[in-house]
Image (cartoon, rainbow, N blue to C red; front, side, top):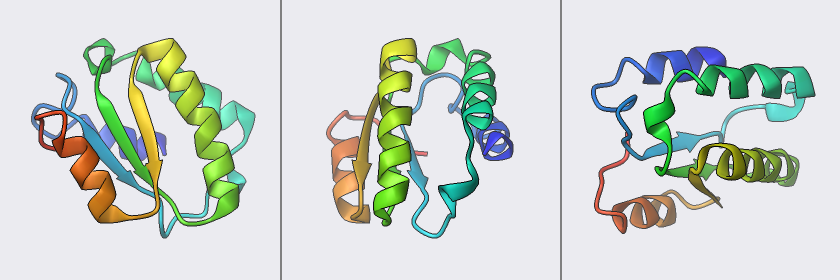
Length: 104
């Protein structure tokens, strides 16, 4: 996951505050532990301009949604990012477009 965040930082505008869509529909999030979450959060500290952005997260499995709900709560309270969870790609894109910015 940290590798994915590092790669996203290379996308023009991402570090400067573009909205993002993270697609975990084919990912297996069951192996993410509390230590992994802490590592990702500390990694996020390195991109302070990402505050006040919208993050749409796609997932399919109930277990993944439970983990992502925890992530959403932490990222919103700690970074001010507005995160919503979706199972439908079109709904996620529509929500991101409502903010007036294009997703990465």
